[in-house]
Image (cartoon, rainbow, N blue to C red; front, side, top):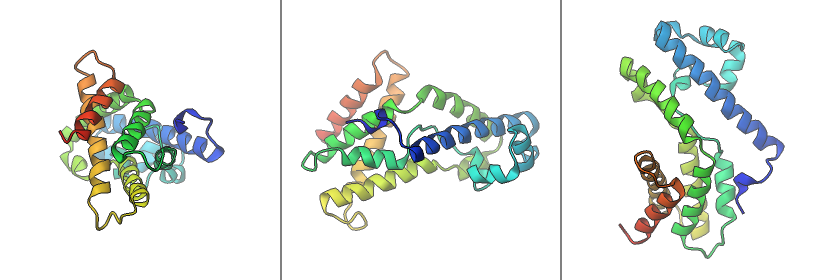
Length: 204
């Protein structure tokens, strides 16, 4: 069962609204920095342009730098772990990861991601110091959560056993490779993900 396709509970709906609002504030902040310069894009100016208070701004972002990081996803780490827990315990780990990645891809706005990335790239070219501090916080949390969950499923300690981390990071790399390929050809993303995981399963 795809948990991304089931009705969300209250906390999940709230989290999704927060993710969408963060993306909206980020777009406003980046446009402000591009139009008026990074120094002019203060938390006060961003808050005013987004029609929110500074206190509300800091409910969404821990700092001004954080507003200029990339976060394209429409899922949470908790949802991804729940998706993994739906898979049979005896299923091959690479197959479980494939199903999870397919669900993630179905719930990700790659078109919006590309547009946001294009905007951010303009800003990073002008201010390379921002790029060096960029964090994909949501993806990092998802990777850490999946590594921990695979450790539980496999009965190993991810701090001592490399396998869970290799599996999850390879899965995310497969998603990235498939998404890149889908933008240059006419094949759908789902079939490319399946092919990428078939290559992983064969040991490349």
